[in-house]
Length: 418
Image 1 (tube, rainbow, N blue to C red):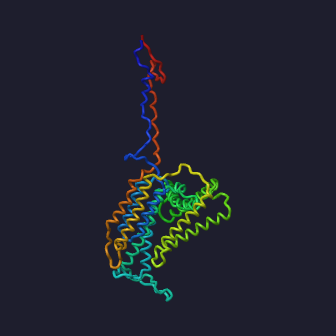
Image 2: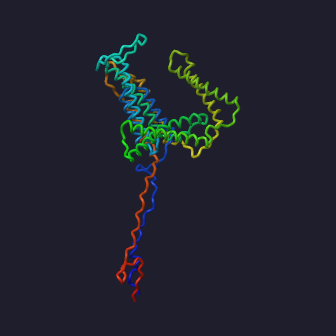
Image 3: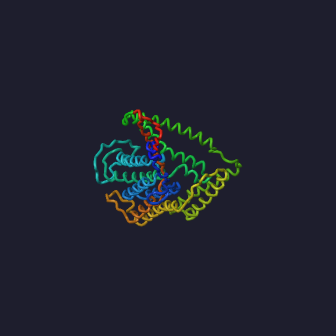
């Protein structure tokens, strides 16, 4: 009879049973992460930029910038172009500073509240009307700040779209007639994110090597590798596009090509004339909305004919769902509400700088900003790369067992007693 356990069962503890890995199907809010249609993000950002272009009030402009930053933080992924939003914030700050400095140099004391008197540089007679330096008034600096903040807000809104939307997926949603132009635009839009990624990679490598991170020497050590990387990327992109057939079109007769080009050109001219007719109240009525509609119809007809030259297939095309409509609708409603606020109370949207007054916010401005921030919760969570899983712990080695001679044995034989 055997009453002793097997040494193998003592030396090797039972392997713990682990649960199978479960794919993260939903977030804490119960929503599946997916990539939103890039056109929805661009329509939302263009709506915010349109709203920012219709005011110089610093309060709604600051709220629009905060809304764009909040949505980017909540809904951007971990792709290279998502890291470029910080660069747009820096560029916006540079624009504001440059506008204030420009007013400081060429303002010429336009205002009653003079802050400081700078020595004025005399100019010849042919430059009459231009003043260099001189008395600096608070009104001229405030006017420069308002103009710079409006331009910065518009740039930051477009930077938010560039950080949220995938430029490669945006190319698939462009009509066939604009395929060549859209390819160039998408390549141009991807330059800034790739440049930021290259700068971050070079700085990280320099820190690992212990190189100094400040000064002119550091700037030279960063600029040259970034420039070389940009050249390598451009050559690789050109070779990849050429191998995939970009730029090749179907055989179209010369007459049809001239017809489509003429329709598109005539349509664009009609759109320009129609927009001018809508803005100028002194022109005849038929040069306004009727000319605009006619130009749009002509341009669309030319684009449809030109789209036949481009033959391409689409793999897994992006579809517009209810979420895309809601996100793009938020941008359209934001622009419409801000324009309506300008028609109701224009003095609040354009606060005067002389006399100095404190800017105020109307309920319609707050409503526009509240609608603009809704995509932070309406849009689905972004798809992020899964973090690397840590390696499983190694199994412990088998325990040593002693033999009658006192020497350890790795493979003892089972002992039986009767």
